[in-house]
Image 1 (cartoon, rainbow, N blue to C red):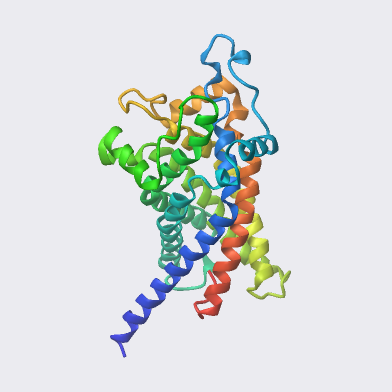
Image 2: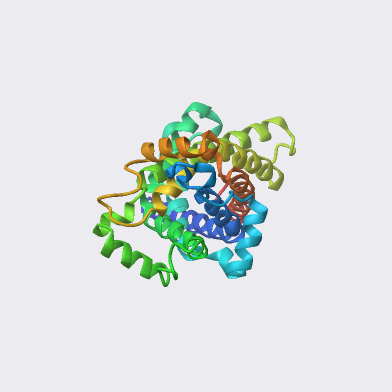
Length: 319
């Protein structure tokens, strides 16, 4: 009997991991066009003040609706899903890792007791840690996703005559060959990890805490059901957006820069942040906020309701 317990525990862990990755890929596929739009918004006006006359250095930045209409007109509906493959692959590593790490940290912290005994401060620290670890593993896929998302914008603006990459594999190959070998795959990894840490500080900790508060309030009859998951995921998406967008802008700009690694456009994430603010003002740090919130909200809703539902179906308990 004792020898069967570790096997059962391993099967349960593997099943949770599989359900996590599946729910994440479903959520990513549903909300991906909004993520693409967010990336394009964040790259608008990049270092517009490089010339002596910033106001006349380029076209006026577009809003989300106008940018979406122009994207579809120029690139078609397929353009809304540019970079989807690496985005799905990323979540196998990213979400699979961060959810697993968070649950393990929480379990270790309370010695197997209910998560209701964990304070908010501890949950925030666990979310921060889980997000950083998950993103550190997933940086290469995230880099490829950002590069493929930016391709259509560069072609449309005339900065490159044709797309540089034939797909995810070709993009990986070119980065390794031209940008410093395997280390090039972690370009922009610093701000990416910072952003993921902040997202999960907001997402995992807020979802965990909000779920406990909703259950305690009796709003959903004290039951761990769809209503509870919906309310908690809405809180999670809003808070995660507020705390993460500045780091997300820096991450996107760091990862989208190409060329000689010895002479990058930005020397570091701090350099990118300072130069972006000088060129475009403080509001540059919240470019793409509405698409980020519009995406994180539905993403959280789809992910948590499907993940919690499948966990319940397999008798694995709630998150």
